[in-house]
Length: 249
Image (cartoon, rainbow, N blue to C red):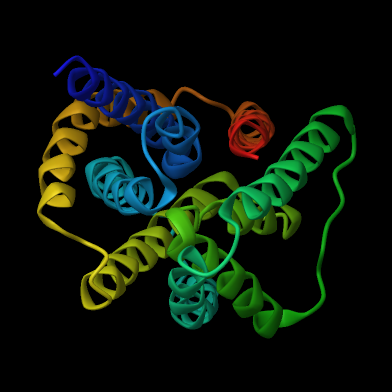
């Protein structure tokens, strides 16, 4: 009974913290939540919770957006992600997840710290929509692996030099599409069971208010402050993933 309550507290606490961060930034629920849930749950149990929580967070903060959508830029990311999600779901059950998280954690940490320390950020103007779609594919694979679809597209939209509102709207639309698709694939693949649905309820209740509070605070950030917030979250998420991966190795 004590272990059950401990697991419940870890799941609820991780959901609340990750919900606030996602409401504020528009992504990062899975990375924050998984860094907490790794203490109590195996990857195959934590991944569906991360995807579900990320979807609830995106839908909860959706009302805070008043515009910024440019579907000519969003659509290539989503189309690439549709290909990537099944790859990630397959990988969840067929690769060493700790090694994969370690590699992604190192990448996120280096990029976040590099961006925070640089005065002039690099920009990528070439590649067109095909390169955007490839980035969407990578994000979709990460989404299928554990709800982390927003990390690589968040980096990419910054490298593209897109404005704050466009970046957040893009992440919102892209992540909602990826999370719905991932949960659908999980369901078809038999990943979800009765205990998954019970934990979904715990995550949804714990994160709802923190997500709305975070979304309300979003408007108080300037373009530069928002950009630095995203970089800091990427670096912290990377460090958390490195720590979680190192614990399980």
